[in-house]
Length: 167
Image 1 (tube, one colour):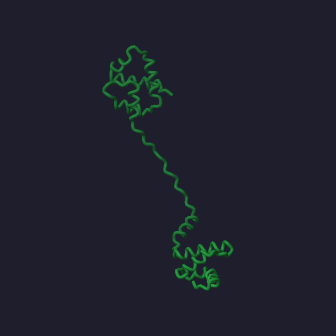
Image 2: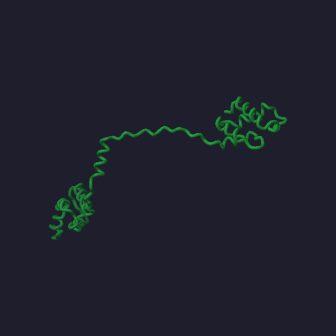
Image 3: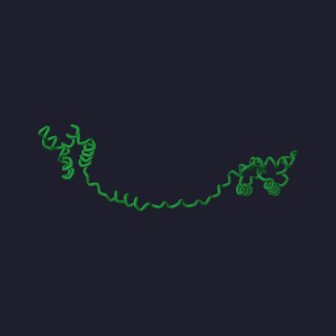
């Protein structure tokens, strides 16, 4: 939407006062209404604060519509106030669960973790243990804690019965 006619009239009045006849001599043979209509189109979308900025920082020679629009584009962007982001409401139960997980001390050694994982997998498979899993448990037997060794004991006992080996 072109700039309002009243704003263009105001601009022309200001620029005529500042530059005198030199401003109006830019269009000696043109109809003033057509010149103002052109300025209105060229300044389409320019904000009032940008127009004020351009009027404060005019060049030495009278600007045409395009030069004046460029002056307007150099205006600093006004700071917009931003609302603070809403503070999220924490779910107390979820916070307690997370804090409990953070406080829990992981005392399992890598051997214990591996052995627990093997025992879990084997139990999910109905107690069928592969040869590789059995050998892994045997190899880690001396590294496991007593608790984990007790969990793995049935599978180690099977290995001893099958092969006569001691873990």
